[in-house]
Length: 82
Image 1: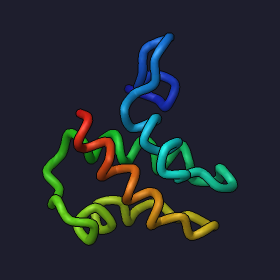
Image 2: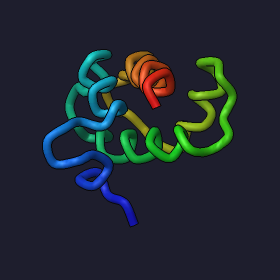
Image 3: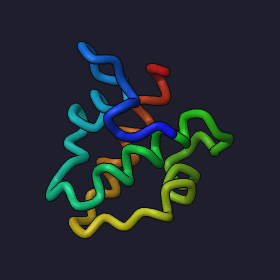
């Protein structure tokens, strides 16, 4: 089982973690762990390349702040790095 603490090495960020920072995908932090782990799984599962497909693949997580646009942008950025 991989947890949010285990997706990167000790001294570096996973490309997904860096993308969440770059795209300001964190707001209140309520959904961060769930969004991050769903996004990490999405990087290794079949999911369409466009933003609508990413939203559908990530639809099991609820963001109270409505940062969905930034989260999708972070996933798309990470896809280019992984």
